[in-house]
Length: 313
View 1 (cartoon, rainbow, N blue to C red):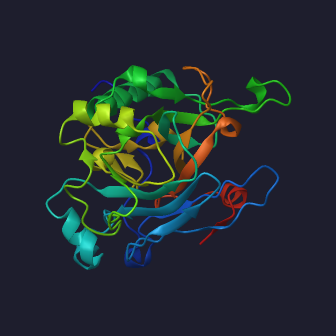
View 2: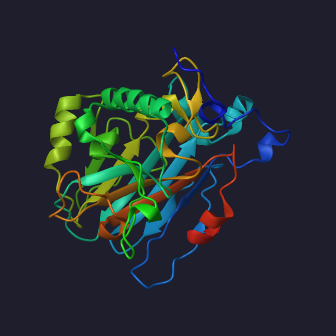
């Protein structure tokens, strides 16, 4: 490969510290988005040893979230990691899994978006822009959607908008096809155990990408049903603990190239019915159902971010 990798591209994880077994497995928080003018509730760190389901409850969605990551910083700890997930991940290439389960508080008849969102605008160099293009094409092909189905924005700085206008945050967004499994549970039926075995339930990408895509496009979210989404597809290529993308290019590179410096949001949201393709995904225009802020052991979350989202360790 013809690029000379810079420190910014390959930086991040440089090996475990001495007290690696005492480190949190991942640094993730469920962020609360209050109504305009209301106080933001504290966001508690979702430690994943043992794996737990953390509540999410806002004006649009109520449910639980599970974020689980293999101990890639210290693989010898995997046998004692978690009774179910140690066995669940055995023999599989995935490094992590995100599960979301809950009920929408009103009918959602517009497309849902799943996005990597960063709080700051980014201006990639020519070289980093080429790398970003390669990565997006790779992940899009691996997950079954074309580049035209992605929304990519490097965001706006305060200098790029007129006074009083809202700047857009940095986005890499797509539809529900990002999730590898979707389970819709009608009233009166048993809801899947979000901390247990969900294999064979609902619809999955592995069954048929075409049929799965058609199924997702036909969904209208209603308050009566319980919805369960699971994501693991890109995880073998993205080590969040090390903050690296691997197995895609000749050498691992920093996740900063694709979604900006640590931390990053993973958001499930919808835009208004009158939103047109290509229009900016402004925070004020979104109905945010789930917002997971994910950081890395490789670098601490900046204090400014901790204060902005009221993070509690």
